[in-house]
Length: 239
Image 1 (cartoon, rainbow, N blue to C red):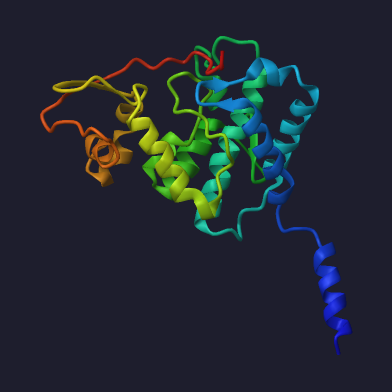
Image 2: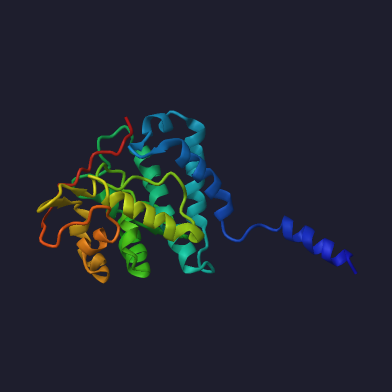
């Protein structure tokens, strides 16, 4: 009676894992740990390492084939944010050396240049039509990285559904307590342009200031005069 159980166990171990997650997240984590820093990405070092360039290609190939239909909502959101960031890295490294990934018409972000969950898409569509509209979590704005200096820093770890809330909170708190997120104090403050461009996304939290004050060590005064920083589209390269 024990033999069928043994056979079943062997077959289960031999069977392929559903989806592609196990085949790309380990490499992605290794690459992030090696090249992503709080001050930017080590593009030059990465570009000069042929093996790690091939590893990133394998990561985005795995992302392209991923089947997310059976995943829960947190796992799906983690996957889509990972997909955005990994493809940004892939495309930025493809253009490197470059001063900025942004071109005059923003075609880097609007052209269908990436493949996610089996579909050709653009960075803009992935962010707007999937990540923002389907999941409605304003904290994604501190998890997505557009390879620019004014973006929140790239997390040096892949997002995971079972850790997602903690990862998002860590990034949101870090950003609103940094000069990149909130500059100045007292009566006049300059917020990241993110809070202006995506102000509707923060409405459910009472607006940008309420969202910030929920996480900021030194809350902004209610009568603070708010303005917005210029957005620096220069490449977020670690020096």
